[in-house]
Figure: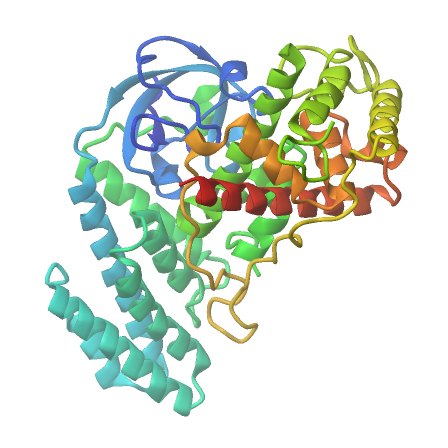
Length: 229
Length: 65
Length: 170
């Protein structure tokens, strides 16, 4: 059976329809019962987990997957039933992912600073690994801002922007959901210069985030798209 | 702006059409992903849905009186 | 027909009768989305538009249709400057999550009364009576694109008005 996953708001609530799945675990829910104007039950494969981050993660069984619905990092099915909540996905593991995404953002910024000639600035960002400590995070944000100022003064706008993303990611860690931090990392990856133009940095970063989730939460990997047909 | 990175201005333009089910599936996905990344836009979406549901409930209640 | 507080405008009872008259001519399955041929069990879109127009005209004749607005429409969101690294993203703090418990019928009616008449009509016609945007030209002037933009503006103004009502009630 193909493994599908569904992120929900606390209380097993759909984020875009407000449908309350609580109490319906194990029962088939028709897509029309959730939101009549939408096309069915939405879920995702393990490779697309990073696109749909929310506080609750559930495994879900789907029936009648719409062919071709998986073009946009999700699958749509005629009906679905929630199976089990992934207990390993908690506020703590959300925090772990967010902090790792800050590190990734710092690494992307460091690479860009190095390419712009700021070796010291790059090393300072790369050396900040213990980000569980608030003081270390503040120091990282300050280092990013300082590197951005130097890069801007030298005319390296791309490097400056990525360095400021590091400061942004640290600033938003406590006030925004993990999806925000993951997005900043994906955006930083997308805006790297000097990489293979045929390689989408944003998608590659999302792939990394999804693999992080699969490994950290010990999730079953979804079948490839062709196996659904 | 690349299609993979929608911003709030884009999301604002899509909100009404998304609610009405009048946008392409790809745009709907991008809009929904943006909501998860952007708390202010998610709350705007929640406000619109709640406010229009209240209007529809008020209309139904009026019809039953 | 005015509200018990003596203020001019569409009273709750008048709005209720208007909506009831429209809804008695539409299906009972929640917000209606017109069938492709704009025909429903409750009559054609044109019939529903004509009914709304007649009801609005009656309210106007009775002096119950408030021709002024108490508050202007809600301002648009502010965004970061074009040269900012987050250009196109909101520069506002997120609003409060809606407390739907305060969205009773009276609050909805008071919020609608804050809107300019044309916005009020567009909102009731589209979102309460389910008239598609492309058919709003039977009630309001303008192209389809203008109607879409106008409904968007009306919705934002209504949300802001309802938020103000909810805040006042808390």
